[in-house]
Length: 149
Image (cartoon, rainbow, N blue to C red; front, top):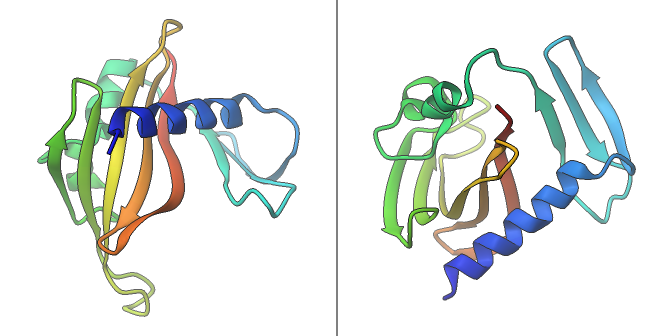
């Protein structure tokens, strides 16, 4: 499987979504965040924006998807994170385990992600992925973080 190609395709699609200013409906806005969903039900995704005070490198240390990283310590939605295979400096295959939710109504989930951490010339850092479950890859794209210096 060409993980690099999968990861680059996902990153390109998500970069286009993030730059798209039309076709979105705002569902929540505060001083700190903006959350939107698409006007077309044919494109199930969402877009969120927020401001975090801190340098990109310090913020990235808290967010980056690595085993034994800080994210497992502060994110209650991540129970376990494992590196399955490092493809190169930017692309990896990872396993994320989430805890049960909604008082046990939603069982714990097991995801296998092809993750691309990409740095752009303008200072933007993104974590892009194509997600699957232990049953196989399905078409779910995510871009967890995108921020500029």
